[in-house]
Image (cartoon, rainbow, N blue to C red):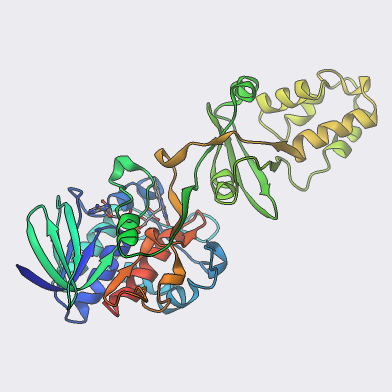
Length: 392
Ligand code: FDA
């Protein structure tokens, strides 16, 4: 049986960062994945350009039952550390919006960088390898793999979450957590498009494909980014963001012209030319089809002069205080991440080591730390992977 100091299960973002860091410390490291290629989610991320971090990443951009847990890892290996690594590899990047950093070229460059760093630091990468069984031994762990048995003193679980099963997501990390008696915070799809019931969909069907900049809120949380009407409901960055906070039965509040006094705008337009249609005035600020739909929905499908101020006010409410109850979400099929995961109370915040099982580590998305949209999830993968890489 081959023996390694460290075995990492999952050659994704977190696993590769951990493996290369442990390799730098002179540890013998095996990283394995059941997929045929490493970093498949990195490859498809950010529309193929990988939004690899966010300049503004801080603990407040993360959801967890313990919001303080991520502070240590995020401050030990920051976005600046990862940017420096990217720069050392000569990878061009740019800020798209809101501090989000993307590769100028392709997400492949990030994978190649991590694979190169692993190779340089002596890490062995085994692909198309299935973990059949994991057992605890006196000095560490023993794994039955599709290609034979291996032993290790440190075992790092970096299997990611349940999102996009087509990309190799399995939920295996949660099974391992259960095997070692660790609590798992209930998981649910996050950063996911929201869906409407058939009735609402029928009414909104003509809007499919239309995007607007919107303020979208749920409870006390809100995001100002683009929103997109789809043939199943609503999507776009602001909706993906709010989906992490939304629960079945909750209403979301949408403002499609935030900061604009729509009633005032209509009154002004009425004074200057009462023969304009409501939708014509709205269409100067919103996509035409959406302006038409709002006028129809409020029953003000006609000339401004035909309506009094109270009626015009209802348009304001329809544009800036639209409240809607999504029926559900598109689920793990399209969710970018999994909310919940291995309970952080079970882990040491500095090293990601399981408090009750020395030598066992959980990192990345499998842990109950979930970032906002915008490069935060990769930053968590890098930071938690780095932290475990110093200790495994
Ligand atoms: P990750 O999922 O990356 O890796 C887990 C690895 O474990 C995979 O290689 C998998 O094959 C392997 N594995 C699973 N089960 C196994 C088993 N039983 N045996 C062996 N191996 C196993 N985030 C961001 O910050 N910026 C972005 O631009 C994007 N874009 C984006 C787009 C899309 C379409 C998705 C789905 C997600 C994103 N994300 C993102 C989120 C980001 O991809 C995610 O948070 C990280 O990949 C998580 O890194 P991990 O290493 O934890 O898991």
